[in-house]
Amino acid sequence: MLFVNGNRFSVLVEESVLRCRIGDSETMAGQLGYLLTLMSLPSVSLGVIPFSAARPTWPLETFNVFDDARVHVELLSAAVKITAPGEVEQYVRAMKTMADSAVYGSSARGLITDAIAHLR
Image (tube, helix red, strand yellow):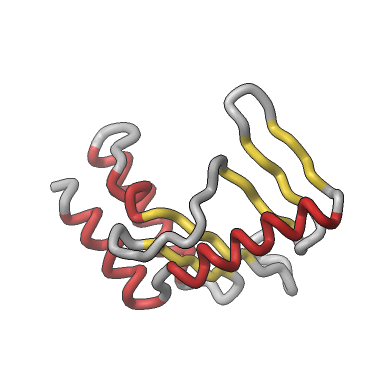
């Protein structure tokens, strides 16, 4: 999917995700390194919402927006697919608001490399 022409992926993560250890240091460093690799792809926009960012909205659950027409929401007990335009629009607005709080490019790369450095 990453290498199919025309596909675009906008990814947002909280800085806390970069620092929350799941697995050992080597595993985490590998995962964070993979984010750095993904950032270099022309089809990927990766934003990191820093600890210091103002939070006009806060997601209550993890969600993925597909082509502004469908949303997948991950709940504790199930995954929910949303296709009702009014409901999808709420998630699209939340995503855009959070994206405005994120940093991109070298600033995002700096947060990721700093998280890797703190693993050692």
